[in-house]
Image (cartoon, rainbow, N blue to C red; front, side, top):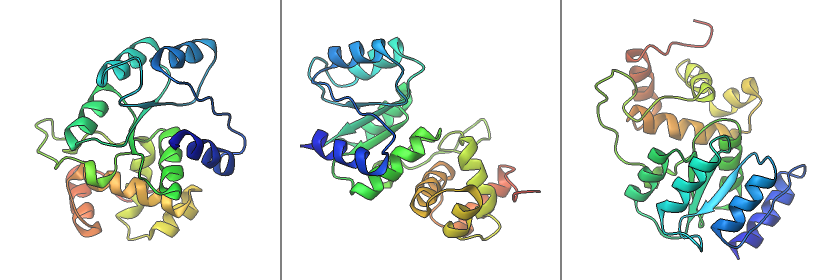
Length: 199
């Protein structure tokens, strides 16, 4: 059912894209070996593998292909583990279609997507960087505009992004900074040396 819904979403939201659906991890690896894919979406409990084994094997065999993990049931620790292994995102099967589409855009543009409900609380990073991990180039562009007080719509207009995509970037930025709102994000950004765009 999810595969059918994903196929319909890709056809609607990404008309130039081609989607290949396979039944198990071996078929996924055969497909990845045959051609270049912009993204591989793996079920955490995909037939032919056990939990994170399939993710690890895929990332090891196809390091140049971004991997996103989907699951109907997962804990925050599972999501964190997938990201630590190198996955570029986690997509609950319950995501609304418009959010799923925006999340795929975030990942294919070089970002990482994790729903806020699954994000672990940030802890201090002894290296002095953001507590939740390094920013992607796109997140830095969004952050440098966010600290000037621009709205998501204004940021989207400047960067050529849809507003919901900007919103997802902002959520990831908040998670990585360990903050809850724009005021806290602005203060944290200053501490980590991320000034306004053009500064």
